[in-house]
Amino acid sequence: MSPPLALSRSVSQPPPRQPDRLTPSPTAPPRPPEKLRTLGLRAWHGKTEVLKGVSLQLLERRVTAIIGPSGCGKSTFLRCLNRLHEVVPGTRVEGKVLLGGVDIYERGTDPARVRGRVGMVFQKPNPFPTLSIRGNVLAGLRLQRSSVRDADELVERSLRQAALWHEVKDLLGRSGSSLSGGQQQRLCIARALALRPEVLLMDEPCSALDPIATAHIEELIRELGESYTTVVVTHNLQQAARVSHDTAFFYLGELIEHAETDALLTKPRHQKTEDYITGRFG
Amino acid sequence: MDRFAKRALVDLVMRSACTLATALALAPLVSVLAYVGAQGLGGLSWGFFTELPAPVGESGGGVGNALLGSLVLLGLAGCFAIPIGVLAGVYLAEFGIGPFGRLARFCADVATGVPSIIVGVFVYSLVVLSMRRFSALAGGLALGILMLPTITRTTEEILRLVPDSLREAGLALGVPERRVILRIVVPTAAPGVATAVTLALARAAGETAPLLFTALNSRFWSTRLDQPIGSLPVQLYSYALSPYEPWHRQAWATALVLVALVLTLNLGVRALTASRKELR
Image (cartoon, each protein chain N blue to C red):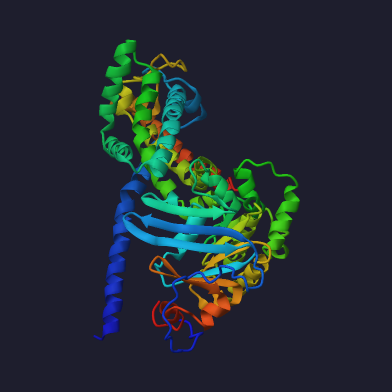
């Protein structure tokens, strides 16, 4: 896979008890406030336990990359953060996900409202083929039956934020599926941003794109990370290094290590993290 | 002979076989259409579409009432079968994973295979006997029952072709599930559903047996739903069974009109769904 980012070093110290190194310590500089926190999050697909109790804290206005080998539960973790995991028949979620301090899995919470606050961008671009570019950007608000004031301005702002405005400003009536793959993905980002989400989830947003489109999207993630709490699932370690402040390493449904990206990729504390980033498995 | 020459030969043989099979499959279709065209074209005139059938011995006459009757029957069948069938298809595609869904799917599959004459007898005993008369209503109901399982199952299949990624995209935008289905999934599948409905209508347009027990036939203009009504297939049937040469010519012309009606239905919906491209 990727070239080793951390060259083999001897790891003699035992793995730390506490995988979450982001808990603020009295000596550390002040860190941004917490936006999202999972507590003992467990998820099942049928009888298979895909997530085995993940507790992870995500800070406001930071990009967190989730890395790990295929099947380690990264996508499932992401889909639990906006209650999308449960829409697949035969799935189950346990534990807590605190969004701004309130559990989104609390009884009586409407999943649709949660999803309106937590935007998501998928692996493959999925614009609505029956809607125009403009219609795609407005889809969330219109289909939620929210009143859209100043639709033109909202469309322009969202498309500008997604760095797509200049390419499509004269084609707003065209079908969303008439765009190239990279443009479609930015349209999907604009569609998510139009709802002004508090958190932006991205599930391998570049894996269906060519290198140039990937560079566009990565640039975009870095920019968006300044105003949105962003979580990016990726199995590209360089991408994690390029776009994220923090990185969490998942293995077999468990959170192994969570640290600032530089620290995790160059000085992993855990043997499994080191094995993964040096390419010994995955 | 080297490997490549052998491959080329096998390719040639297989391709010829496939071409031949296609030609064989098309031959009956084309010859039926050509024969109906050749035999029926001579009997066509403007009056044929607008006039009532002429008694034996008189020249002229047409199938105007039967054409209207067929449209009335298809309209009735559509009013009955399209809403129920499409909604049932949506249910099966989106919520039909439980035992009730499996049962409904099984029943629809069995119903697709029921011979149309049995549907005719069923509606006869249910509607005709209790109303004590043959009626357009009974005919429309019989055709509708025939269309229902086809519409249900094809609608389901077409909705299933809408990628889950679109459903998830809608859900992830905070849209309630029912509105995702109504505003995203169904519109995406609409052209396919329209085609499925037309195919069912086209098939029903040619049904004769169930109408013999239900709508019967009429030689007069009628749009009353509680009275017997004429239709192209039944008119064709009675013309063709008659011993009179002029009526045989009328039968051929009726056959041509029936084929043209089915063809128009197909092409019409295709044009309609192709032009329905304006985006919101």
